[in-house]
Amino acid sequence: MYLTTEQLAARWGLKPSTIKSQRLRNQGPSYYTVPRFGLPLGESRVRYPIADVLAFEESNSITPINP
Image 1 (cartoon, rainbow, N blue to C red):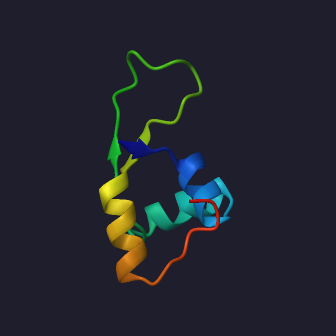
Image 2 (cartoon, one colour):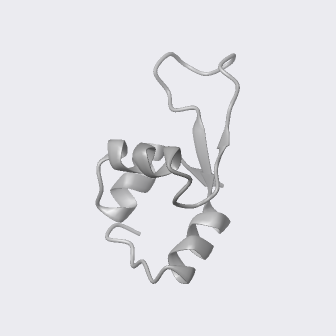
């Protein structure tokens, strides 16, 4: 199970651009990138494993707005 950038942004009440910015600064939960082939045009390639998101929230005292 995973979250996309858009789903993580909604969970935390942030804009997707904020999540992307944090990712570029090596902040936030760990993620992986899906290869382009096989994905519909425009679909996010970045995936955040839910276990890593939950661990990051716990270690950083983040309470999701939209769990």
